[in-house]
Length: 297
Image (tube, rainbow, N blue to C red; front, side, top):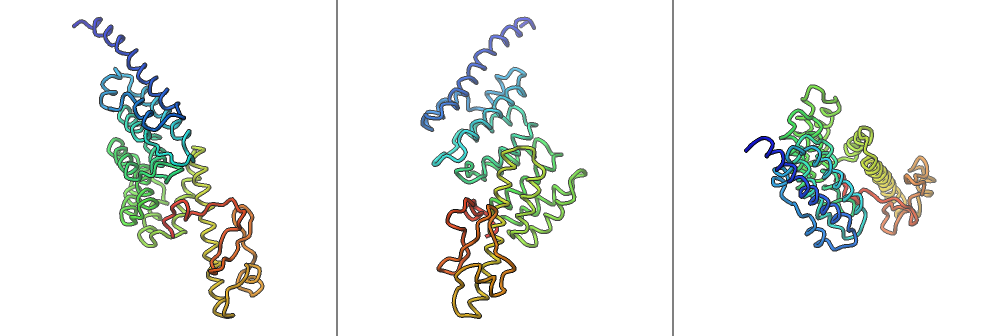
């Protein structure tokens, strides 16, 4: 077959491929349709088939699928009963087409591992995606750090988390905090201090607006847990001294057991429930990390 004929056949194959991609996009944009209907619209679910049909446009098509992954996730985040059923197939196709596309691994793992309604609640797939990224990009310390994050935050597997952070720390350009993280996770496991260190690093290092928002909310939730822990300790001290629960944090402060009147990140004072446990003020907009799946509790 001549080179000219091969070129002609390649050109003839391009329109059906891009038509299929257009069909995928239409299906994803049909947000009011059933989840089953959307799955049927993902007409090309075989990453290897799409790669064979790409005809050298691998990286371009990977960018298309990554963009659709982000749009698919963003259009469903926070919606009740959303299962994010197309998220993994879209990410699978993306990294098969371009195994070097780092954002797809790093942010895709977050999208997959976040608990509903923020994400798909599939930490197993997030770990698989990250390991695929490591295999395809063996010199990227960030992927090892991401793996450590998944083991620590999602799976509460502190031994594997520490090992992953230690592996990341051994890369020539890795930052010094990774060795500290490996040591802290091995020593303290799921402590609030360790969780705060992880989320602070993510908040300060990412340039993705959505990831910064998630990290900010996690840090706010950790502050609530920290505050509640200190208040509960003061409540127990008050009960031991007076034989009853205090009625408020004002009473705890008046008894010299709190240095001030603690407030949550939104500025609302905490209240003490009938069981003697610190609680958020009824009208506070804060969501605690316990509600978001914090392993530190």
